[in-house]
Length: 319
Image: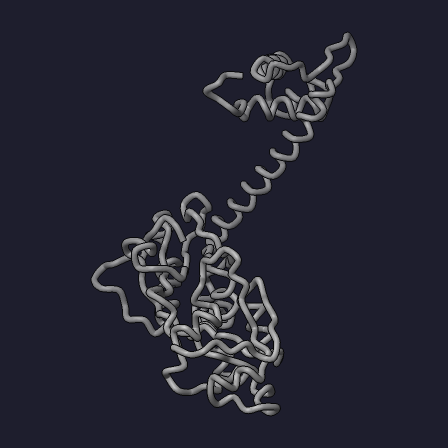
């Protein structure tokens, strides 16, 4: 194969896939609006690039070699996925859907409970939510708007700040009926819910860090439950399984409706979460779309953030 090209031309793959499926160059040509000889030349060119025969050419039959059968399965599956992805993308663009991405915890705890308000106010805009904790290239992944918890520098030029974050102990109000929680030492009577940050990307979500920031002796608690996803941990806190570190304002809605309580009311028990904040950014490909601007304005309003200065537009490549 040409060292400068590690993948064959798509037309060659389409011709091979059709010929392998029909076991006929003639039928493949009819399907692809090409002549039998054109398909035959495509297959020969592909075999030369791969350096292996794909078909056994007999007088009245066309059969796949063992290598051809393996390659046909791989090519057929890949082309099917490409067709599916192309159709899905075309449908999204045709429908005018706005694709919004954010972390799993922000999406589950803060964004989703508020989406009904956006739909009520803007029924003509379809929102597609993509929850993912990894940073993604908005242009490459065809994502329109991103909300991420990061530093000012990593947010990028033009990103609009929504709000910062502070950590406060939260639990189900039902849990407080069994034992008082009026000072940090009382945490020793409760099961502590922990977020397992195995990659060390969010140390501020750790009880040990919270105690350190509060300049307190660590409390072991009456037991421990550990969770790989933050929103699962908050679900456990709502269910009365223990005390968790709540990310305010992510859990404000749960506090407002009474699903969670903040028993340690003193402000000195609310540790700020480092030099980070939630930022909203728009892909350059979507920067001119009315839907994107409308969504950014709505998110900013929901967050109580001031409007961006001048004609600032929240644009970044990653989110």
